[in-house]
Each structure stands twice: as C-alpha cells, then as structure tokens.
Image (cartoon, rainbow, N blue to C red):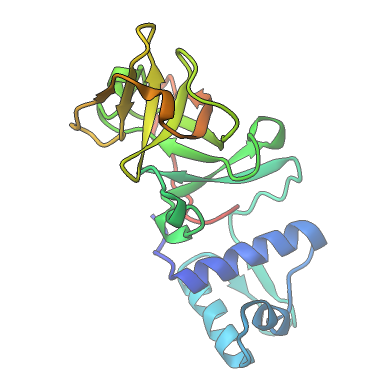
Length: 216
C-alpha cells in the first residue's frame, strides 16, 4: 500500500492530476503555490519531494515542469470517484483523508456530480441484499422520498444509513458497519433521503482490489 499522504500533499497531488488532464502538462511550482496560498517556492518543492519519496511522483530537477505522476490514467472519458468504508457525513464529504481509495469509471456510468463509492465489508448490509466486497455507487439525491425496494442513503439521528422501504411501508436501515443490527422505522415518511444507490459492482472471481489513495 502506498505511503499515507497528509491533507496538503493529497490536495496538491489531486490538483496536479486535474491540471494535467486539462492542459496535458504539469503546473509550475509557482502555480502550485498560488493555488494553495504558499508563498515560498521552496516549501512547494519540499512537498513535491515528499510526494516523490512516497512513490507518487518522479522528478527531473533539470526541467522547470519536470514532474511525472505515477499511475495516472489520462483518458478524458474516465472519472476518479472517491470510495469510502464508512458512509461520509456532510462535513466529511469533501475531506480526502476520509477516502479509502479512488476508482476510475467511465463518465457515462459515474452518476451525477458528488457521487461516491461505498465499499461493503462483512455482513454490514446483508439485510439489504449487499454482499461483502460489493461496491455501491451513491449519487446525491434530494428530489423525493423513499420508494419501495429502492436502496437509498437516509439521515437518521444526524447520521447516514442505507435504507430500503418494504412492501409493508417500513424502513430497514443499516449503517454498513459489520455486526451492527439493522434499524426498523415504522413510519419513514419524514426521513430525509440524501442519496440513492444507482449501481452495484461485484467481483465474481474473488480477486482483491488494488488500493489507490489519490485521484487518478
């Protein structure tokens, strides 16, 4: 597994990936500093050196933009989507240090802006028909309540849960944490829906997923 990045290191690397996608060349050290309010080019260079030492970059000191990002897919038709092991709350949705990894997906399949993956583990969502190792693609949703059999993300007591409405009108809600019993809400009419599951990806061969901890 690659070395863990600090918040500023991850933000710089993600900015460099986005810049490279748009311009086909890397930002200069000065441009990186301006993006993050870092006045010292030496400080930016130190961040880049740390990223190189952690295995995310290769540097060529003889060139002004002599940086190569390792493991980057520059296909414009793909999108890097954050993946979580815990359902992100609103305050965590933009914090990259909560992201387990990033997965690349064709833009036509990636859902709307703000979508993310949830990586199921153990029996955390067994009551909702989700198996260990499944990837659920969740997109933001605020345009309606729960429909029968839809798998949605709902807010209960200030926390997020996966929920499914039964034929009897009840809500079965689970956090996704292994071993945690599902919650049953008899009258879910007022339960806010904040996301909906639009796709489920399941490996059928049992092979492990390679973790990539930054956008690619």
